[in-house]
Image (tube, rainbow, N blue to C red):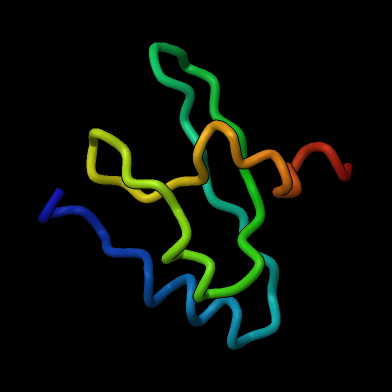
Length: 71
């Protein structure tokens, strides 16, 4: 939404600092959310756009590391 914080510059700064970045993927009709790893700031452009106009990894994107899977 226009009044929400735009996070792209924050994500770019995370990578400039050499940190890892995990972003949410919401499951439709569910309250479940996975936190999946971005490989780079440029990786944002490969994300799918949801009906809410939010970029997130698609459901068939299974190659990404899940934050809780690694302990």
